[in-house]
Image 1: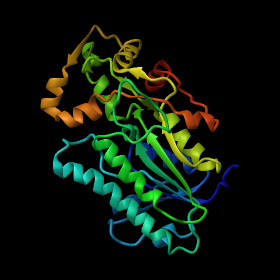
Image 2 (image 1 turned 90 degrees about the vertical axis):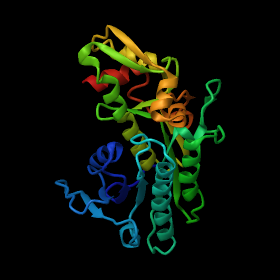
Image 3 (image 1 turned 180 degrees about the vertical axis):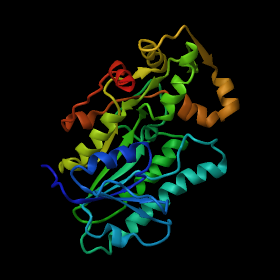
Length: 306
């Protein structure tokens, strides 16, 4: 059963890599209210309205009458070193926003019918001998802790008729993504930098499929629960670099050791984020009928060069 179009969606994190592109696509069929910390953002699209929010004022008037919530907001996980203070900021930025949204729902007269909550494949932790899908249990580590807390807010919301969706996203492949920029930074010099051995498996997804999947889940009212937003076929870091080499000449690779990465970036961040080694299947998304545009890394990389 498909959702009705033309209704209003509230988006948080709507100015980030995924949120900005998603808002543009949704604006073709919906009215968008995008929460932002900025006080001067104005959209040229009449279907997109930016609303400045200071993190403290009530969101009740904004959520009243909205059809859905897409919560993507939170401190960037990879931009800074994982100091104690930064880890607290990563968790609290997600919890505070999600809890604020949740606290407003109960008092509304016309409540949202669907809440899509961002999460990540870090939920499963790291076990290179395990193939994960949505039925797999919560793992261990900092990212698993973040995902558990993030998802936990919505899990506890008790609002009749609210469809709850948790999107566990992998590494997003996009020319605008930080991962892609780092991988292609040295290409003008005809060499590539590979983190670690290159044998680690990457749970990746092209940004076009990420956006299409979110809209698919929003509009299909039979979809609820957890969904892995990753491509059906995993690849290794070495596979990714070699595939990039089919489009841009790479004469040699420079491998950065785990030890050096740990010294520069910290052991925890290196293990869980930089050298992530996970094989994850999008089982429930495929069962729901979603069709991937980029099923393998060759298709994903090619689209990044178009």
